Amino acid sequence: MTAQLTITEATVPILPRHVKLRHDEARERWVMLAPERVLVPDETALEIVRLCDGEVNVAQIVDALAEKYNATADIIGKDVTAMLQDLADKGFLVDSGSAGNNLATGEKSV
Image (cartoon, rainbow, N blue to C red; front, side, top):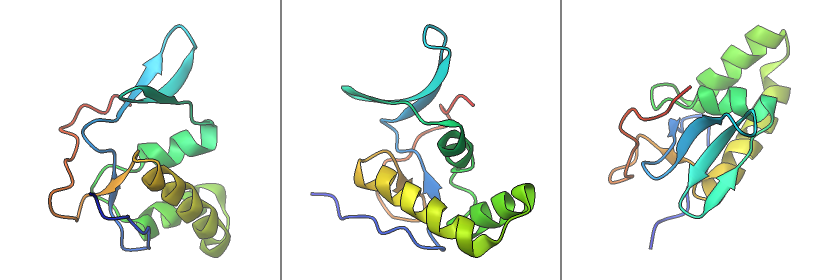
């Protein structure tokens, strides 16, 4: 059984190998595909997910969004952390810093 991931500022999020971010031409929307599941992120969620590249941590994602939208990191941070936690709880996100997390191998199409 996989341990529950708790999203913190230090977490370096990435999509696991079994989750793909793809543009669905038929729906004209971006979708997150997992075995027997499809998640359709809204524009805000999509922007956050695109930053989950396994290279930057949550604090860096929050800072980038705060700068882009001229908002305070405290407010954005709570929303970003909650959204990422929800994705992690559903198995759509892992921490690239964790051992044995079955990371994607560059197949994210963004």
